Image (cartoon, rainbow, N blue to C red; front, side, top):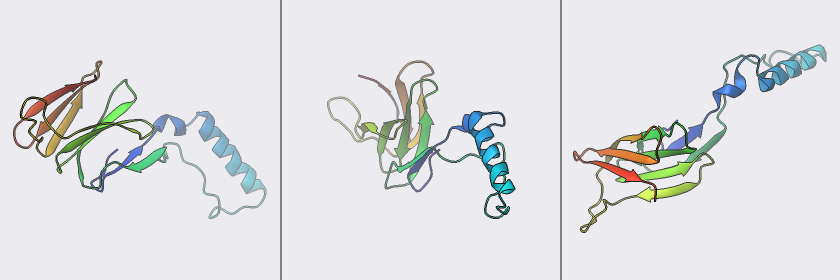
Length: 139
């Protein structure tokens, strides 16, 4: 997820489903500590569906206006009204930064309002508030 503060958080909701190994281990720890005399305040019972972020990092210093993960590839993109797009891998490493349109004049892109990945290819579409839609492909 992306926030207006520019922070990105990566979540894995599969880890905390009831019946998963991690949830079962947390539930066993809870009951063990309860048997040892730990109070409910010190050790609250884990709830299925309770999720914490796997990774959190600052993607932008400016407010983020668009965010999109790729459905299959381990990448995501975020855009800002400060006229740039960044592409990251799932570990938070920056893979690319887009600030200018391709071509002879190299005009700066407008404030980003929408991002979308192609479902199967590494192609990113970006819409800006100056009515321009651009499509970028992995080199």
